[in-house]
Image (cartoon, rainbow, N blue to C red; front, side, top):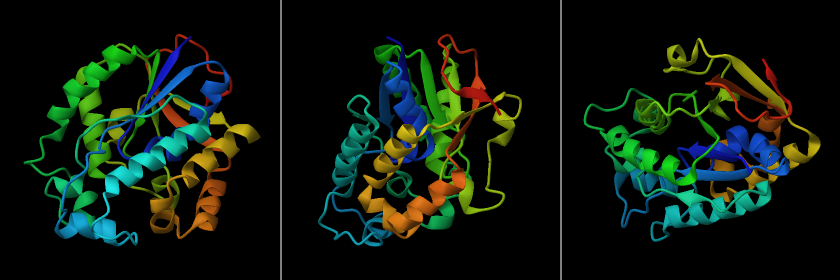
Length: 252
């Protein structure tokens, strides 16, 4: 049984960006594991980190990340894949980033998280022994996505990687920021047109992240509208050669 390992920066990114492919792989008999990197709880958050919780209508005393980890469990159940893995690294607002613009700027010089992530990712890959890795291209420029890419590329793993285009950043602007575009420019484009079952599973998984839907999309109707703009297509750049064919994955 082949294994696919999706490396999600946040608790929703993989489901949002490649949930349809993950569901499709599971339906084809793959073992599919979704690991999220930045899921560590922080006791008594302050400042901008607390504001990121309050602006979603959640009181200060709630363990925000525990709530989101529980949403992630529901999302993988909707996708029909293995129980999720949660790495304990902290999101950018807990690493000194103090505003929304800073989250989408170049990484801070004092943010050494990529160096901390790299050995954890190496250990995860060694443990799961994936035949395929899925990871973000950092479309949109969120610093956590950028640092995840930096950490993974530093390992030079000899495993094919499908680098996904980060939804919903892909449909928020006509020309979204792509700070790492040069890294992927020469890699071949691959696309998958999701069948109705995979589209339904992806939609249900996205909707499972209830704490995010209002903030990200303005509600479930907004989620549906953004997904409709994707037209049932998920896009990737392929690094390496696929050892196991993936039905429906075509050149873009």
